[in-house]
Image (cartoon, rainbow, N blue to C red):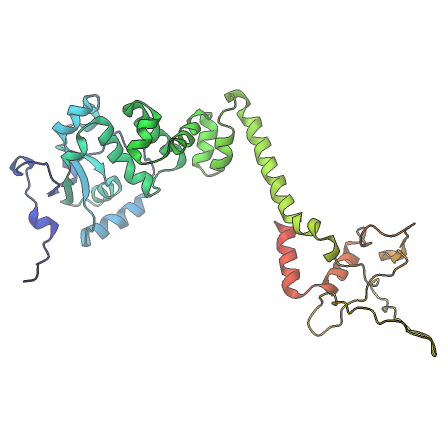
Length: 341
């Protein structure tokens, strides 16, 4: 005999007093007004009113996930200081606040919920249940997450106990708490995404009055490191740098070869031509005497062997012409991307 699907709403009974016991999860349908949010939830961003309206209408058509609640009596037994925030509501949210807000926004008459009194065995257990969903689903920004972790450390008694409660390492907990040592201004910039969290954590141990200067130094250092990484392949492989080639508007020099009747000697080893545009011969190697014609007619000499290719750095037009003559279109696109980074 096959089982029959049962709708969550068909198992619910309206007043909680008529539900016999709550040792197990108890499904119920509730008017959103009978539910209060918990001050334990540090999340502040739930979407725009338009987004909440869209979610509320989706829930009206079909609610796939119930919100999780505990009874008012069970909640206030643990957090009596929240009585004013809870007000006269019969239940308090554990998670699902965005769905509850959306249902309130579109004035849904009922919302699927599950009563989980087992989550409220202690203050730390309830707090863990409130923040765990947000942390696991990345619903909190970095500062909200840090504040939630700090709340749990206070309830659990230590960072080690909070880490165990969250099934995380103590290092993970320590990294989150470090953000709370930042000044309020820098915390706001972290929340806005203007300051990378890695940099924010690196300056958290700096005295508050020095954090702005430390932040500027850290950002500048990161920019310099990024620029150095872009230059690294050219610095490691100087032999792969393109030679100067002929000056614009001049024909490449040709090798007349050995004189008639002389021994040409052993043939030189074949050399791979420098890359160039498809269908075009590669430019010849640079002259061996160390001299090269620069753009505008100025000559660049060398008193000895050149330390590297002699490029017309003082003439961007000549340099661009040389690069175009030696790089494929794909390599040229990559170079332009690196220069613009």
